[in-house]
Image 1 (cartoon, rainbow, N blue to C red):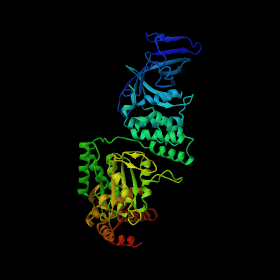
Image 2 (cartoon, rainbow, N blue to C red):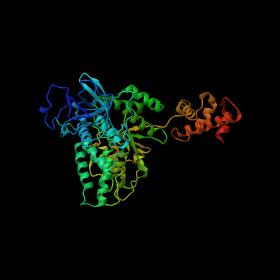
Image 3 (cartoon, helix red, strand yellow):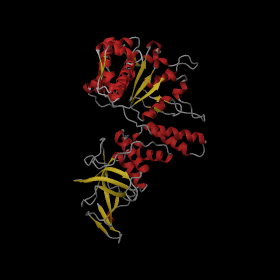
Image 4 (cartoon, rainbow, N blue to C red):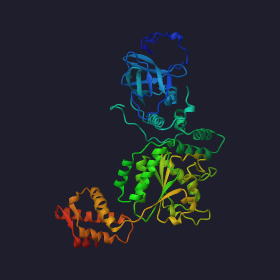
Length: 507
């Protein structure tokens, strides 16, 4: 239903529906809710549908939602006339956002298209009176919309794109207490129930005048960290094993047994749609590509990653956080890592696990990882709330696995990564290291040619070291020398035989 009010005569009402206005009750909910799990909005999968029988609404329509305590709808001006249209249906995920926008009388720009059911709204932007995007308010609205689309909604809490669309604002960080309170009101359903209760409690603490300034400050910091994490469930979509193997082959040479084990893990995820009960421990000498392999797994799983360097940690409290009773309290490094990633489902890379200091009076800091690795939830002393970890895939790296305690080792599936043979190093230099360096230096591959004898000399020089880092350093040395000769001596091609390679290596 649409009502048109002339600006010259606000009492003049035109009813486009046969139902008399007198029969309308104050506060009547005109819309029905429908459930959707789509992550991309369009006129086929809209936020809501408005009544527009005469199709007078514009593709980008300015206006405001009417007060839901009086009447659910959308009010807008066009050609000197004022119109009010009813909301016919709404995606249940967005109902609380609609109520917040209506109660705050936020000026909006709706993007939509006419359909057989009505005007389908698939985009909402907060704007000024002149239609300009209000950066701060709109960033908040886009954050809420993105979270509602990409997170699982707690159904118990719910009552019974076009080419000219602006780019979404996804980089807003919630730090202001009012914006955090608004987020809980608009999108509290995207939070796990325990965290939603925790957030409500900490919001009350921050606003209380009966507690100390430090306690309020800690509550606000903890809220900011938790609300800026995107919380998801433990269900994982299937992954293409062929595409996964292609990523592994592009990132790393050889390691066929290791790659096979990772593909087996992918197939296991495809069958169960959950992560394996055990993480991966990549054990091997320095430079063989352990960290690179961990990043490749994150890419395959399409998850963000975060990392923790155990070699720099000498105190368990650095991992677990300190209680808020102290004025200088702070969250632990594990919680900080979650916060940096901004997601509850992630690949958690634990570097140098064997380097954790086990000689401290308080014990080995690595023991604080046990609850994280057990996949039953992790509690930080500062946050004071259990963090769901069912979507966390831990991958640890180590040079000497015999230095890792048995309780920690039992939480991992161990993949031993041996060093490369001289023949493998030759192929890595030719196919990976040198082309990578030449591309980085904007050089063609035919400008720097390494002969077979020169290559053997390079590999001989790198024989005493493990991994591939020396290969890349040598490749950069030769590429830089070739570029120098091209730029200063006018050469178009630089070829290296055994003698010329020896002179470069002696520089």
